[in-house]
Length: 333
Image 1 (cartoon, helix red, strand yellow):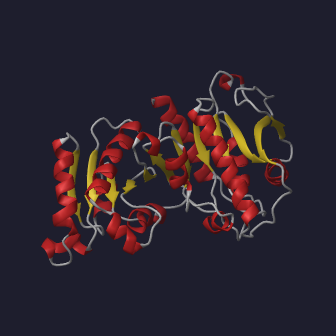
Image 2: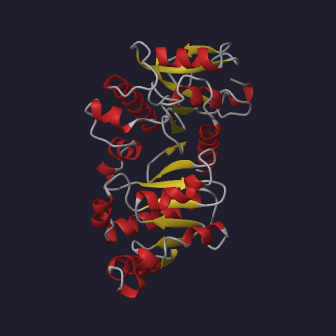
């Protein structure tokens, strides 16, 4: 790494599912000019295969302490498994377990203060399930193992790009379950974390827009009463706490208003309501931020892309943005 980075605590960068594009975008992003100081976490064979694919001249140095300095033309790797390289583009329990092991190690290091934050490459939900891992995604893993639940807290997912930010009330559940889970407490948690997340981006007085659950935000009760009985009371309670919250706003127009500068963040009721507007603007621009953790965590806004894995053509832009955003958030702490 460069001399300017030697005194900086590194970011932990997990390689994600070994059968996907995570390892190659992680290496590309970590080796670009101006990248934050990073330490990779994953299986040795996976890291070396990605190196041979996208950065043949790079030296991968195995370390055990994230603070270990390595030569400039190299990247440090904390080995979390020594299995042979997994076949590209195939769902497997072994690959799911490999991805999970790296995440758990990254969380341990972050909680110990040995790394400044975590940037996670994409994982595959079917591979996790095949390995018997009881979490559908990173967010749930981080909430359980990151010290949040034992402290009585919860986390929320924020998707952000240069133009809009959104925080989700519910995450990886069916639409039917999302409706049931979008209760008063979930609304309050998302609104509070939306404010905190915006402040982490340097916005002193965030304007929080809360989307409705039903079409036209319920149209005064014609299309459902969740807005009247749950969402509006939560907004009023948040306002009483000093949060600049407003709504409920119709979900089909609130993101347009946020993009035009009326709001700093939108609280969306369920996964696709919040993620489609961000992803439509380009996967290379979006970053996933987990709010409510005692450490910084970001990830690119795309999946494992099994269809192009191993071809060396995956775009590292979102991964690079995730690293840059993590470094900015760490600096703002």
